[in-house]
Length: 93
Image (cartoon, rainbow, N blue to C red; front, side, top):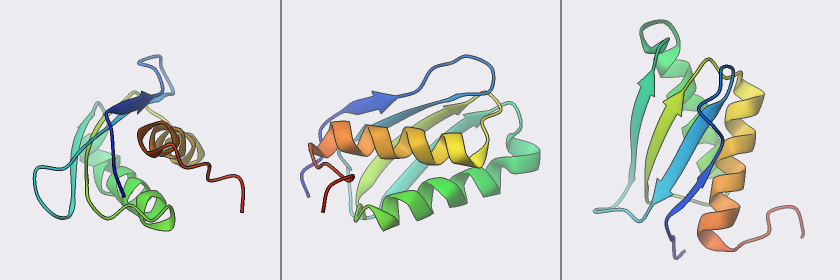
């Protein structure tokens, strides 16, 4: 699947800015910047990976800047970024 540069989210408290870029190599690479990375970094990365996998994305560079987003917000931002990056409408069959 062809991936273009795209982003979704904000840097406001309780949100996450997710940027998706074409990969340099095969696989997913997630760069996370979070004020709560020590406590929740693994969970944030897991939610990002699961969401990408469910959307059929296996190769991408993801840069995420978290400001305390809940899992549902992370999923929504990743999904929106994927739609923008691929042009694929994930809400239609």
